[in-house]
Length: 275
Image 1 (tube, one colour):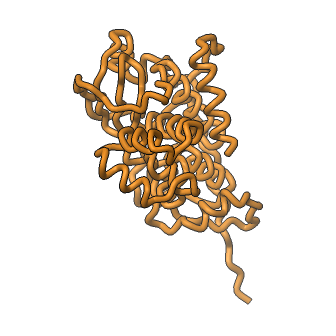
Image 2 (image 1 turned 90 degrees about the vertical axis):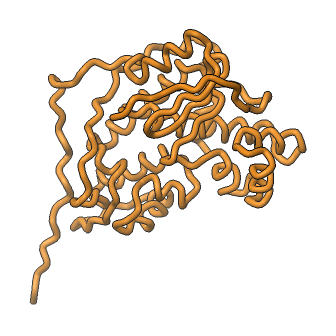
């Protein structure tokens, strides 16, 4: 009888806390902080995403690593894909399409607000990731539905830092965030939730966490959390041939929320995460 030895799950990475640099909100993007202070209007283009600003506040965000507003609205039945596609073709961009559908009564303000907030925080997380290339800002008018509440830059920075810390607490190795994923086979496979099972079944050696999020029509950050939980359980590992991404130390705890706009956006964010 031949015995097959199954390798143990990967050990929990250990960080050298003494080597961690200090983090603050300005470290995410000094340019964005300056644009917010001068109440600039235009588009900030960074390596992993873009932020659309109106008078220094974020009204739209996009990243190739995160599902866009259209996919979030259509993936789970809020809106028919054909309806969104026609509106996007007419308007030329996602905010314009949302404005058309809202005005025509094809989309409720509440559903749009939740999906818009999710898309901004999701894409903004990647747009504010450490970058090897400088960003640039194009001044000019931007399109945004009047019914949508713009997101203060401080709120986006706070949420980005919060998400980095959450990911670190689940599993501190960021390699699973961007590398193609392969399935592991631990000796004792732990139980997974249906949500995590949907992610695990799409791990095939080619897809990354972002690719799985796009296929499922889910926010990319939620998928990153599921992937890191699966990695912590020893069920997925990054492809060994993939290059290691740079390590991002966690930020310090955020100060209490006092701005009423940020407090409202936090409640909307919590409602979106509970869906």
